[in-house]
Structures are given as structure tokens and as C-alpha cells.
Amino acid sequence: MQADIVIVGAGMVGCTLALALKESGLNIVVLESKATNYKEFKPDTPFEPRVSAISLASQKVL
Image 1 (tube, rainbow, N blue to C red):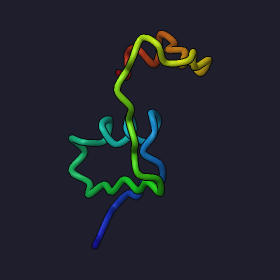
Image 2 (cartoon, rainbow, N blue to C red):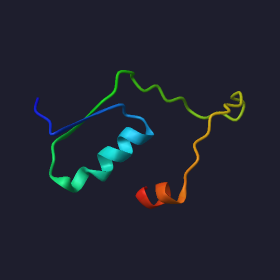
Image 3 (cartoon, rainbow, N blue to C red):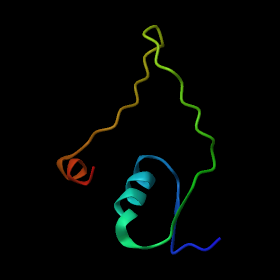
């Protein structure tokens, strides 16, 4: 496999970068070491305190 850019990590930042470069004409590969295991939201799920703040600059990128 050939790639012009390899992005390590498919989290918020890695995926945002890949999408930002989508129209660049470069061959981009995103690598992630963990399988994603998203859980269905249930109202009785314990509170998860992790949050993400989105600045004005991030809003413009997204």
C-alpha cells in the first residue's frame, strides 16, 4: 500500500485532519490500533464526565 500521508489515530483530531485533506489529491491512510466499540445510548447509563470543547476555530474547520 502506498500513501502520501499516514495519520496515526482515528480519533476526533485524526479524522478531522483526514477530512480536511480529502480534496488535496493526496493518498491518505488513517491507522487506528483499537477496534471501535460504540455502545447504544441508554438513559440509565452511568454519567461519563469526558467532554470535548469546541472553539470558534474548531467550529470553522468542522
